[in-house]
Image (cartoon, rainbow, N blue to C red; front, top):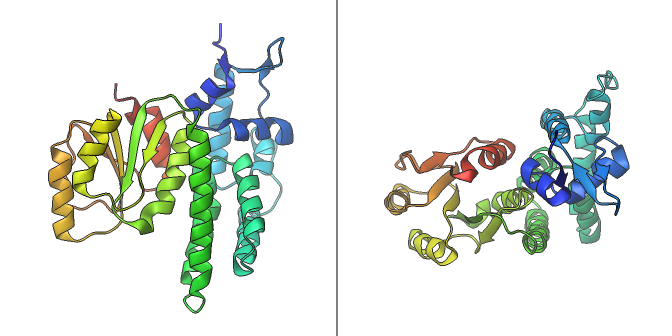
Length: 284
């Protein structure tokens, strides 16, 4: 008999937050949980397989409105499946160009209701971020967009973490330019109930040991922005002395060598989160 999971447990198992699961049910009808006598949603192992199927198609670049057709083995509409993402990007670029903070906030809220963070970040947020950063004649666009997005992600993570009681995880980065990706990562991992701790960018190597001890955390995820050889050696020395499980992403210095407790994650945010949740994060 298939095991039954309430929505929070199901979110932890799949890495898809409850808000998105409800949107997939109400707006698109692509996942339909059972209901208890009191109306609470209950999911089973078949639903886990269905979510994996949904995530597969989202990661291929298909918008959520086409996924319903794909998982029913119905041919999708004859159009480029990237069109919807380009439309979302253009809407966001337009709002950013007009410094329309309310419109940006609404676009982000709507997008994250339909897509897991890792997919939404790679397909929408990152391309727009790259675009505004390339507008060198209008530096305010990038500064304002990054400020608003950073504020949004901080608020989302803070709200999400109020209910999380899973394993503790310290997130850190060596440079403020890598912070947005790390905040997106924090939200994606929070959907799987990890109790994520983040204390801002540019933690020094000496800060890490103290933070891990204070938090009683057995896991450290360190996202690197490119650094010089001297800084890389400092990190290598610090990490080799830690007993926690260490997960590295970004521009990892070549002087840091993998060993039994240091693991390099894949390049894309989606694959990083998936690998961490399903294998490494358990530290079995």
